[in-house]
Each structure stands twice: as C-alpha cells, then as structure tokens.
Length: 208
Ligand code: PRP
Image 1 (cartoon, rainbow, N blue to C red):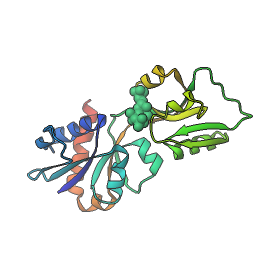
Image 2 (image 1 turned 180 degrees about the vertical axis):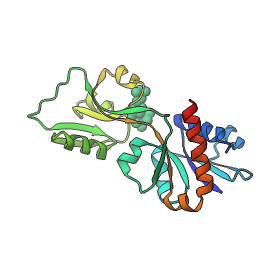
Image 3 (image 1 turned 180 degrees about the horizontal axis):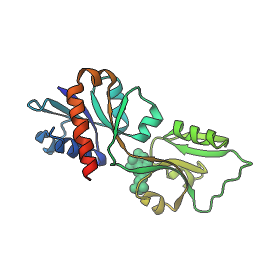
Image 4 (image 1 turned 135 degrees about the vertical axis):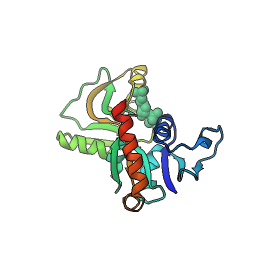
C-alpha cells in the first residue's frame, strides 16, 4: 500500500482529482462522510486527509509515503523530504501587506505579524530591516487593523481578504504553489509506484 497524505480543504479536491486522473482513483473518498482514511486495495493506495500544514510532518516521519504540501509550508518548516514536482495548482503569493495609509519609517523597528516567522525573518534579514516579530495563528489581517502590528506577512490568493479589510500588498516575497513530496526512504523502497504517479502527473501538467 502506498500511503498518501492529502491536504484537507480547498486544495485537497483538486489534488485528489490529479491522483484520480493518474489512474489511482479511490471512489469511496467521494462519499459524503467524516471518514479520514480511504483505501483502494486493487490500486494499492490509501489516502488520508490531514491539515494542510501537517502534510509534511506525516511525510517526513514516514506515516505517509507521499503527499502534497504548499511551498510556503516547505519553506517555513524545512522538512527533510524530497520535493518531486510543482503541481501548478494552489497558486498564491507570500507578501507583505499593510494599511493603505501606512508607510514604513526606517528609523523605527517594524512590527510584523505572521504565521510564517521563518519566511518573514529571512526576508527582512535579506533586506537588512530590523523587525519585531509577532507570531499569530490565523486571521492575521486583523493585526494591522487593530494596531497590533504595522504589517503582516501572509498568503495572498485572490486578494479579496486584503481588499475587504482595506489592506494592500506592500511587497511581494515569493510565489507559492502546491508540491508533490515524498518520504526519503519510501522514495527508494516504493519507487515503482511513486515514479508511476510522478510520470502521470507530469503528463497532466504538460497537457494543461
Ligand atoms: C489565507 C490567508 C488569507 C487568505 C488569502 O487564509 O491567510 O487570509 O487565505 O486569500 P485571498 O487573497 O483569496 O482572500 P486561510 O483561509 O488559509 O486561513 P487562516 O486565517 O488560518 O490563515
């Protein structure tokens, strides 16, 4: 059995349909229930839904052989895994955002709220800017509105969340997309099945 960790939520459905098209379908996954694990013995696959930010933990520790994780998570947590393929879905950007009327005063320490403290530290170190890091776990956009921070470092997809909260992008840090990742030893011991999936997914991307 090949154990596959899928990111639960928006991205997960798209990811599963790529596996399905690759010939590794598992019809029971489409049943509307709260089960977390689905198997297709004939195809030799077992899928499970995990929180998107946890996929790389399952893969790194071998509870999953392969999985799909956002580049943001891979850069932030630097798991010891193989990154096999950019799937070209779940595209968004990591950006600095703030209130429209905010302008940075280089004489002051910049207060930055984010979930992505490693990405943010690296970005500001790279431009030589002193910051005061405020680690949050969600609804990051609230921070500059309530004066908790000057700016945020967060994911921007459509830009709707920023717009509806009167915030704007101040700087782009990185483009992000979903990556197929593999556990290092599974990549050796289950190489046939993994290579097959990799090949089929590459074909799908090329034909898109
Ligand atoms: C992410 C991100 C933004 C939003 C951006 O949040 O943190 O809030 O999506 O998307 P948009 O540009 O299309 O509006 P997510 O829904 O992942 O939840 P979070 O609050 O836990 O970060």
